[in-house]
Length: 125
Image 1 (cartoon, rainbow, N blue to C red):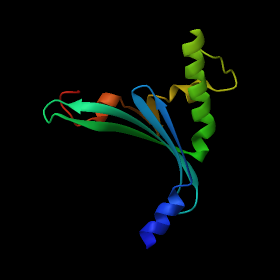
Image 2 (image 1 turned 180 degrees about the horizontal axis):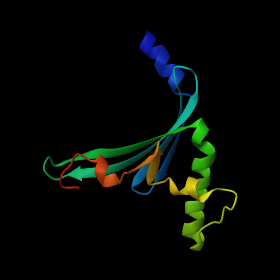
Image 3 (image 1 turned 30 degrees about the horizontal axis):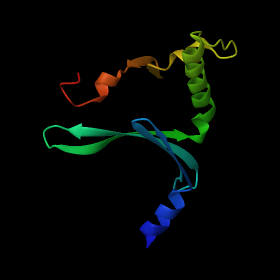
Image 4 (image 1 turned 90 degrees about the vertical axis):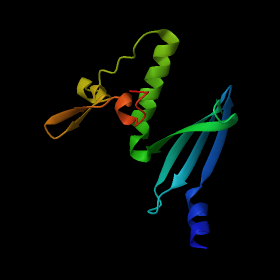
């Protein structure tokens, strides 16, 4: 019974967007503390040649309320660059804040993290 209550409390709103070979799911959920957050899931239908079956490859992104403004600005900037070929200028944002995309500052040290580092598949590295 408690699982059903948690499931109902978590799923607040959902929107499905079909876009060509991909489907995007925008789901608003609730934490135990009743804070709302957004999950964005990209789903692609793939074929496994070895098994001869289709499967769905999914990628999820969790976006919390405190990050909405920066996320929206970053997404908007990237989309504007794609449309115009020009990088948006934000003089009100410090360059150091923008530069933390690939290098996260922890204390006095920077960690260089790339997507390749996040996989356990040796063929991808």
